[in-house]
Amino acid sequence: MEPISTLLALIAGLLVRLAIPLGITVLLIVLLRRLDADWQKEAQLPVLAVQKPACWKTKGCLPEQRANCLGAKSPLPCWQAFRLPNGYLREECLSCKVFTEAPMPALKIETRRL
Image (cartoon, rainbow, N blue to C red; front, side):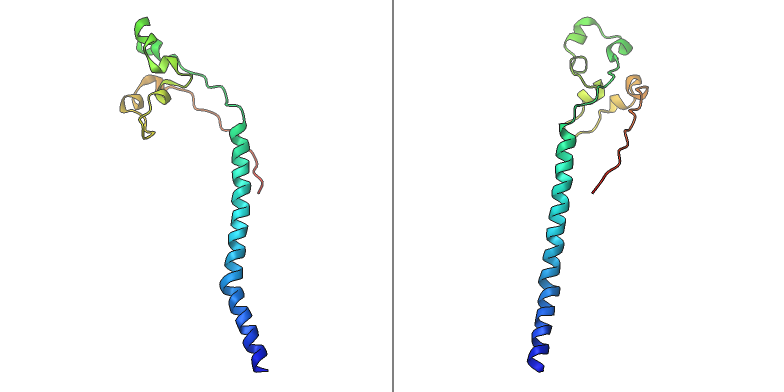
């Protein structure tokens, strides 16, 4: 009787120590791959059109300034075109009338499935 209970204890120990963590890891891998696939599909969707404010009109830029301005050439709003390399907005953009009076984008809420 003792060898059977020892074998059962060994199997239970292996199950608790190895099989359950491995099962949880495999389950997380499957879920994360599905999430990644959803994000890949979302990345393939067409980009929404952005209403770009005419900052050069608000600031009164001359035509030659506008010709050399990254904000005027970019399809993005000027504060997005002038972002710092770390992703932060420039200080002058935060207090700019074009930025502070820009319309807030509407969020499209979708139901998610797992």
